Image (cartoon, rainbow, N blue to C red):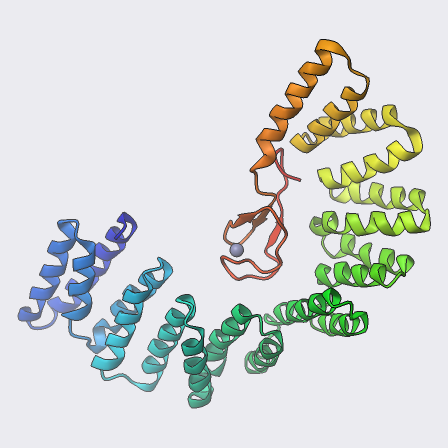
Length: 382
Ligand SMILES: [Zn+2]
């Protein structure tokens, strides 16, 4: 077992000791055993002693739940399941506490990838305990998310909305419809994709993913004008995702031959989101209308305001066009060096848990939040 568990376990052991201090002293023997294991750097034995030998009494259930939750958060899932099953089998619990322990157990199953067990348990709990229905269904929902069963996720999430009477689940439902739209888009079923996206708007009218997908559907359907209309919405919905729209926007304007209109839009984007993706897109437009010198002047000017390695590489490329001899060799070396600095760098990061990756994901694989991953802004990023 890792060192990370030792300090929390010592704190838990102290809490258990305090509880036992109020009871018969003979039971503190196991507490002392557990603490001795901890002090001897034997945390596995300490957990075994604390979990299996301690009586599960009303006043120690919170401690057992804290221990089980700690083990699950740290990925010690077998031990977490053991703790929670132990409480269920050995304690006399009131209805609310029994439900709380069972939900914890369903969460253990979920994290362990035992999705069938997590689903069966959480669905049964939702039916048995109407007063805690939302709690149980939130676990069921995570099962369907992991299984990518978006229709069942939508049905389940709608029930949670009803129970809560709130709107916190609405953005997630919007993303479930987006997932269905992406599947339809991949199958070239543009009618179904559009219909799913209409549903997605109904649950979150400001979801930039919907606009990006509507743009993609319009572009693939051959309607470049509609694609531009949808894709330009992203700027007002969330400027941080403008970079995700630029490839499709460029294609749409190319089809329409509307470079100047695209340039005006990109200049507006630059005011609100001076990312290197916008700078490079605007640079391509400037290059096609005014040539390499104008492009080099523009990039150099932007790099003074917001220096990034991608911009620096672009600048070297532009200087390489006219360079010769030793200067050319030096510039090529500089370019290789700059490219090596960013080749292994992540380009996206989750704002909730810090997960990083090189491709855009709308559902964080680590913390499971929706739309928490964004392009990384900074000298090595966008
Ligand atoms: Zn995350």
